[in-house]
Length: 561
Image 1: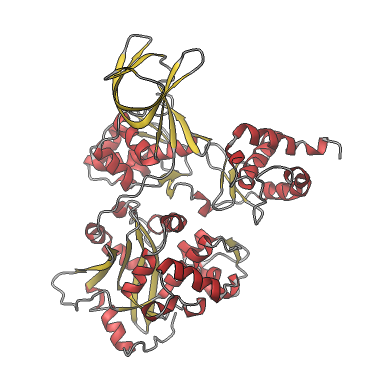
Image 2: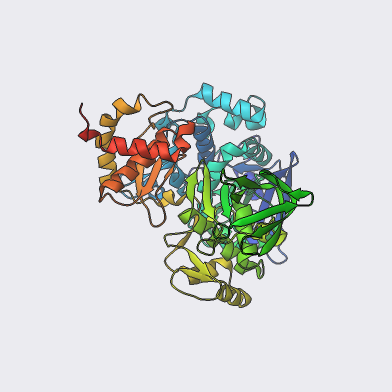
């Protein structure tokens, strides 16, 4: 990155750098896009005098060009083959070791430019321009001309700050989701490693650095958890900027509450048969419940709860009644906090939120697109009442964060291996420990990760992949007759599962499981492959159907041709 910055829009290189990097390490410039306009602020060290800036300032694109290629390819479903490092290109230092490969999410978080090179991905200008025209509501021109063609993207390209933020604002939630999940790694184990204690999961940004001679500009751009586009930069590399400014940056960024994604179904009171469920107007009818209710159990105990349609009363043919809740993941996590412990102190509650989300990911069953779990002291107890505001704040602040690489358990007051004890978490928080330090104490062999994104550190199971590749041609004569089956564009990656039940990542074409050792392992691999092949069809959510078909495929060699 030693190229000389060109003069753009009448500005000299020296003027651009002077505007972009005022007074060495004395300040951090911060901007975000909200309500159709740019908002700016400037953090300063001591009484340093630094020039003000506005949204019309020219800034170098730096590594941010990779983020725009990522967004385009993901939304248009452009094939993104892994990049294999040959060991000859010095830029592979950002990608992988010689002989290894890097996939799209890791490439984005690690800033592997070789992966996103438009020539490698064969990106054509007409569809690129059509995509950005749709996203921006107009043909990319004027201040947005840098998005008119893939060839316009270069790290030395100078763009108006407000045009950069406006482009990020044009990406819809579905298009952002995968990028945001990949970018959470920046504050976990990327260039902002350990800054997660200040940001939680609020910051989903792509880092960038640029320099000319001894002058260096570092920062990041992306989104906050609610989709608010954000940009910040100061003198230094992106790593040094994040380390130096993280506490103060976190304090000035606007509040950002993520939408509650995901789906969790909770079977309530499975160990306590229900006798009656009554509302203000008498016995409750089967279906969604709205209002205040009182449930009486066969043992004579009773419990009051409120529902806004998220609790459903079901009645079996034999007359037996059951209660089932359906929530977003953060609502579920917050209800666990309310039921199992409490929302104070804040750092302990944040640690418990991550533990509860991790337990759900490791132990829930997948049913009809939802994670399915029981409300029980043997699993997790879940409040039947709407979550408190404080518990919701802890759940949202840690949105998508989980402990990866260790089986997660917790207890009220008894510490043990891989177990968060609430009383100890409270004691540590009162000593000034942050939530990540509380988690490190409870799960010394685990690491913070983004839920569903542990595949970014995928340990490939070569034996499983070889078996699947060998069997697929044999399966095709059966699968071609199955309604809704679409072969994945590439052979799925099969990754080692550290704990919990096997699962497939449909958005990343990956399967997580254990090494092949038995017939049941082979059936599991066939089962998860079918979830990928039937991902666009309702049958892909029918576990009984998928399991029967997986067993048939595994035993095909026993059938007559």
